[in-house]
Length: 208
Length: 208
Image (cartoon, each protein chain N blue to C red):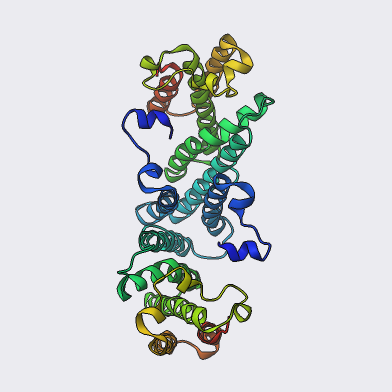
C-alpha cells in the first residue's frame, strides 16, 4: 500500500506490473469473490446465498468501502475534517468490509434478522475500534515497535482521533467501542461468542 | 475511452475526477451489478439467480473480460500477434460480456442446459463478429461516415483481421460468423428468436 512495503522489499502489484494490470487484477478478484460465493457454497439454502451476495456487494460499493475511500481522497489536505467525517471515513473504509465478513457468516449460518443486526453492530464497532487504536499506536509507538513507520499521520498532517480528541479521550473512546461491541454479543451462546470477544480484545489491546 | 470522446466534448470520468476516483467508480459499479441482480430480481427461483451471479462474475474475471484486456495490454506494440491471440483477445474482451448478457437472460428465463449453451455460442459468435466488422469499417470508411476517427488501427499499427487475412477474407469470415451465430438459434421458437437474428444482422451489416 505504501512506502513501508517497498522498504520491506515487498513491492506492490502496481509497481511490478503497472497500474493498468493492477486495476484489472482488482476487478478480477472482486468478481471472483462473487463467483466463489455462488459456485463454491454447498449445503446452504439458496435464499441465504443470494442475501449474502447482496450484503457483500453493498459493503464494497457506493454505500460501503468505495464511499469511505472517495470521502477520504476528497479530504486529503483538508484542515476542516471533524469527528463526524472522520467516523464516516473509517466506518466505510475499514468497518464496512469487516461488517461484511461478520454478517455474511451470520447469514450463511442461518442467523435471525435480529442476530444478524446485532453482529452487524458488533463488526461496525470493532472496525472503528481498529482505526482508533491504529491512530493511537501511530503517536505512541516507535517504528521498531510497530514494524512500520511511526508518526506517519503527523508527518502527513492527517486527521486522527488523537488529533481531534487528544490521547486520553481517544483511549476512552476505544474502551467504549470495545465495550459496545461486546455488549452486542450478550445474547449469544458464550462458547460460540468467545472467538469474537477474543477478536475485539485483540484489536483493542494490540501493540503493533 | 479515447481521444474521440474528448473531440466530441465528452470528457471521460478519469479526466474529470482523476484516475483514483474513476477506478473506485468502476469498483462501485461492478459491485452494484451483483447487488442489483440479487436484490432486485423478483419472481425467479433462487437457484437461477445464484447461477446468474456465477455466470456474470466469470464473464468479468480472470477467465473473461479481464483476461482479454490483460493479453491485449501485453500485446501492445508486438509484431507477432497471430490469429489465435487476436481471437483470444476479442472473445474475452468483447464477446465475454455479450455472452454474459445473453446467457443471464437464458438462465433467468429458465432455459435448459442445452438452450443456455446454444445461446452462449450464439453470443460468442456475434461478439467476435462485432470486432471483425469494427476492423473492416476502420479501413473502409471515412471518419465522417464512422462518426469517429477512421484508420486508427493502421496509425496505431494494431493487429486486425484485415491486416492478418486481407479485406476479402475478413468479409468472408464475418459472413461465416453471422451464419454460425444464427444456426445456433434454429431450434428456438422463430418468433422469440427474431430479435436475436435482427441483432446479429445489425452487427454484421452496420455501416458505422
